[in-house]
Length: 97
Length: 294
Image (cartoon, rainbow over all chains, first blue to last red; front, side, top):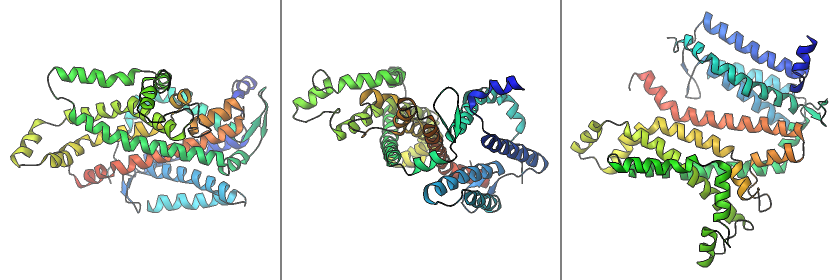
């Protein structure tokens, strides 16, 4: 275990970033299982574009990144608010896009 | 709803995925890790949270480099895509001219980026360069080292010279794939040259033009070597694009945390714009597929 930690020391891991990436991987695994259990196909949503469930995840993640950046650039309040907005945004994307 | 893809095909791309994991995903993860920390070397890191992102987003230097980069990419696309299509339309379709033209068009693409920069650096010099000397002899006060407009014109023309061939060759490949029967039908209908282009050639070139726009956008948005060799980002900071600014920050100032934050924002901008380009340009195709028309 010690040697494994040493091997990846150059990547400068922190528990916060490790949690973030674990969350992303877990999301991908969950989406894969969901797609296997219940295939989604394509859908024409409010943006006027055809999307699959994977597309909607991509739009959610990319939009969430921009929501966090916009929050950092404009607002002074805690970043958790941006995370809450991102979750609401992602739910809206999965419902209507 | 039908399942649109056969997921077994993913096993075939597994080797590529593994290679990409080591060459792109692990470095990207490292950049994310660096972006929330500060380091003074010796593999020691200190937690900085979102400080670098906040500083970057409030930085005039970053905003100016971003606008320069967007302007450059917009100019490159507005010039190279129509010019490439025009050249492709003028290229011969049969005979010995085909090979000659293809070789001539491919030549600029074979020259390494730093050599292109060096060629144009010498070419544009007022004392020994053919372009600079000729323009100055004609009465133009051309000096890309000191004049901002001259520097911009030189960089844009250099990029057009280097990369329009790629667009032309892709468009030419698209044109060559159109069956002769389409042109015969158009002649029978008495279609004008413009109608043939608008209704036959342009739709048939669409797929290759999507690739051309994406390639040229991503490449022009990440341009580094040619302007670095030609102007070094000057005069002043007038040609300091995002990539040049990033290298100055990371290697010149050794500010690895802020440079990592800038890399992530840079990456997100490219990702968003590429997705928008791709989505907008492929929507008609998706709509047609849904309606069952070819």
